[in-house]
Length: 282
Image (cartoon, rainbow, N blue to C red; front, top):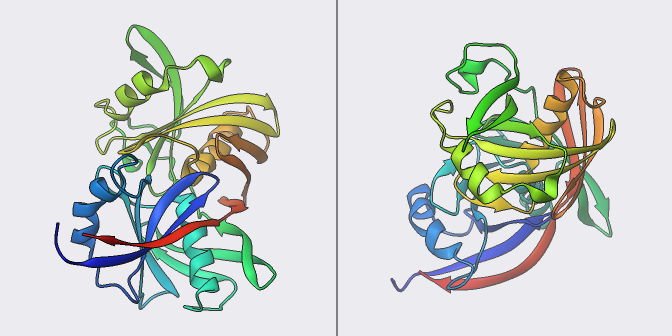
């Protein structure tokens, strides 16, 4: 521990919760985030979260976000996190632009804000175009796209469709979502050699062609209540595999997202909420 005092805001997008650091005010670096994310994300001995997200100045957009998992590893993007970044940016008067432009490691993404009582209520993110080329996702499979590819885990075969939304996803459609041993299967698929940078894993049960249920195994975090890039990948995977329509309602453990795959891009709309603010000694 040091004598540094860090101010933070805890926020969540349908239960996918992060510790948000306002780097316009706080001297907290990327290296700090890598170091302290495992410590501050601990749900028993510290604040507790799925990781840390930095809200930073950008010379290309209204703000820049950097996202770190609870194990300290950095991810390219977070769909639920970017909605919270948009809400914080507008509500805290960093920028009143609507739509907002947010710089990520995925590129600059646009956030359309829906305002209620002078604060952001819901946010629609243009998640940009999915990457479907196997080697660019990345996987070790040279196909474009990768649809219903077999992978054997503990003697059982699963079929996955691979999509990158700036970060890699393996989408697996199942008949019975409740009985999936996600802690075992998710971890083994995440670390399978097919995925050079590891992967997120989504298990999806189809209710009808416009409605699905999803459970998420996040790379570096384990099972989470929601994953926006994962829900976006599910929208794409369902459509290209002819299982679902281009617009779906996705029920995640933490709440619902509306997703649409149109004009080659994915649009995601959902809520962003404050949990609490505080200070912590580092």
